[in-house]
Length: 461
Image (cartoon, rainbow, N blue to C red; front, side, top):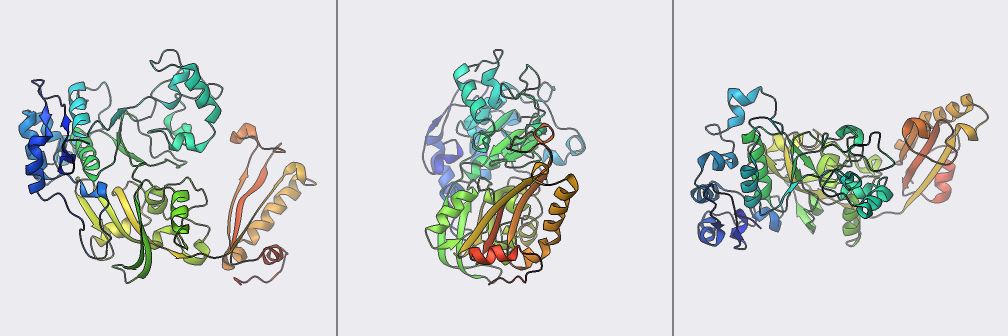
């Protein structure tokens, strides 16, 4: 809990104030409550706010904090981005490069300490995940290193870390686990410098305001199951939404776009496997990804969101009924087909982190249905010749349209050997085709087998 969280629970927070005094949020609690920051619903056509969404940053809260800080230069760094007070719109920031550690304008340790206090000590100074394997890092520890090395190829190791990403190429391969490293050094590389482990809207707003007013690069990470590494950024302040795990089921929901039926509201940290399990308990299913560690409300849905059920119901973005979002100016808004419709439109396929930080989304759900799945693999070594291998690949591709029309879904790789791709599967002497999962909703096993026969007629029944 932090300064702004005092509307829910008063806590003593120490902050750097120049004079070395402390902010007692017990003294601020009455004024914060009077500022009207405790709300349970924002508009029609949206579910009630989650607990962490109720805790919001306000001008009154910032004014009370400024009185205690006694340093306008510092307190102004957390102000909202209005037309009259938005340093990012000033000529000096509009076209300048972002500030990096070591630059004269980089915030001092005192400023970062104040930020940490305002955030309720949720600010993390980034240490690369594999730093425990390198003696020149303070956290060098052989036991911890062994754990990292043993799990390095396990996605859950990286999704559960504040800054690690799936493909280290995009942070520069600057600090790799022992045995996977290309150099004998561990550097910060493109990992962010600090992370906000967000649990409330107020913390996200503070982080957005601070990054904007300080001209610091801002990135967002949930799991960073993202193969182009958008969660990385040299010298960045990162907002980690991974632990926004609230969820609520609504058996009868009326949305702004005219939809009426069951829906679920998910916090931004919910991963697909968590969404599936929660929905299963109510006899419904969610349109989510094939990779179950993906974050449902982040870049997955914001990028469109392909699903094993897309051939039947469309993309994940098509299911969104409402979103709660912190925008670049620090404001917290609801986006539906009627309220902030432009934001609603952009965040359903326009790309993750391009318009704001999604805190939660509400999505329609569907009745469960019987589904058959299959996998199959073949390599150059399994076929009579290289030409035969590529003919088999071509045969599958030629039939993709038929499969989609029948409501099926295929997720496959056509990749090179371990030397080129960096993986090692039995028999991958050269190129190989690997069907990760072929999903056939409403199909029996015999029907699925028959659909693979060349020239067979396909139907969804």
